[in-house]
Amino acid sequence: MAGTGLLTKARADAPAVADPATYLADVTALLNKDWPSNRTVTIVCHGHSVVAGYFKTPEVRMLDAYPALLHRDLCGRFPHAVINVTVTAIGGENAESGARRFARDVLALRPDVVTIDYALNDRLIGLARAEAAWRTMIEAALAARVKVILLTPTADLQSELDHPNDSLNQHAEQIRRLAAEYHVGLVDSLAQFKNQVQNGTQLASLMAQSNHPNRKGHELVAAELSKWFPKQASK
Image (cartoon, rainbow, N blue to C red):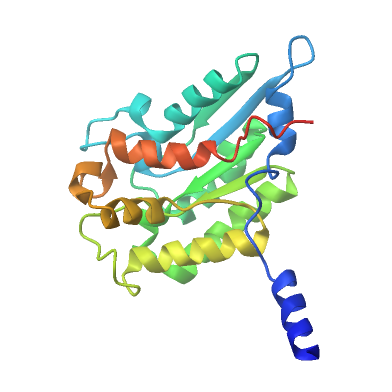
């Protein structure tokens, strides 16, 4: 019995992803305030071409990408709030480049929430370099008292989604681990794409090109992001 108790305590002390019901309670409290007690709430979406709204390159459809879909959803659910959703993404960029400009382009905006989405391109720099860059951004945001939501990658038609050693899966697992270690938010985009495939959806129907989701694919991500802003989580 003593061993069971120790195991239970170890599990309770283990790192865990933040709770979607409460993690952004301070932010949703602001979203629920009425004029003149309210203020602008700023969400910054940082990352690569998917975040920037690239569909079939070079076509950009920002209004159909998940930052804009999230913005529209939040404005509908919090009609008395002034909400900025700012995109600081650059097509083709990886997390190392994103980390180098994080203070200048992201933290300078004094965001309330930052989302980070780089894994598709991080496959070119490998797990170790990507991890170091993600840690730099996460720690900088937390030091500035900014809430963080990490995103696993959206799908790639060239990846083997059912193979754990596929680089996309490896980067996704690393992001899940970082979210748990830092106790921040997590949107598991890759898991949502996998669920769709397992339920009979053709992956190609969610993609604008091999490595960019279409509107339906972006809707999957936006729906998961919206869960971190529950209407009832106010103070």
